Length: 328
Image (cartoon, rainbow, N blue to C red; front, side):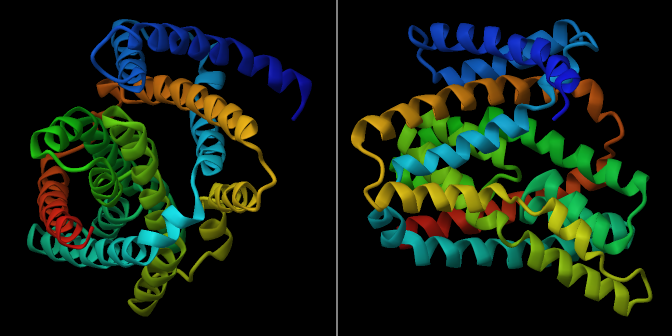
């Protein structure tokens, strides 16, 4: 990265750092997780005043901070934990993706939503939010209007579930690992899934993140499937470079750190230090996530896609709840 580019990032990163420090300080005395405080801080600051343009480049890097935090999170997981419920989680994630797409496409067809928009909405709700929207858009040749429409709907649900899902989990009294898996199966995007899990407990946060990462791995399969389907209908050919570009490659880093930690190459002190760094990165990322949920950016979302995705979300979440309580 060019030195000038680094300097452009510093003001925004510094703002995330200040708000993150405040969130962690308040979180020590508040009855909620510091991560919840971090999201709230970002939402409040952006609702009161738009961050200046000189801060935006650094703020927009919150997704990179989140990805690095997820990679380092692997140091705190044991292979025994992963292998114990791994096959079940993989099966549940695959089921959520398939059922989510089928339900989304079916409801969208009944609602007479245009096929390309319908595909983007189904992909975003079934796999990994806006990332899936962009990956499938690149594979089926969607235009900017379709992408904006679908992305706006996904962001709206990201914001709503951040507020509602932790309270629902507490009310249901689910064990932390079970709630984490359920959140990872239900929420659209990685950031909100991790935030919702950590809002309940560290254990729930770890399982929500791991489960969501498993779901994310299906982004390539889904994009190729949609590309083939639309190509058969006479649309553009699949764009493999776009699919790979949108694939969440930090998954590879996460798995690498899990293997390194479980190979005995990291002692307890190193794992604890990496866990602390991961917590701070999550805090800064969640401040940025809160800033990115500015309602003024969601004006393009209409009623039809909201109703369609809501129906899909409720059905998939309900089925997911029945599955996790029966199998875990």
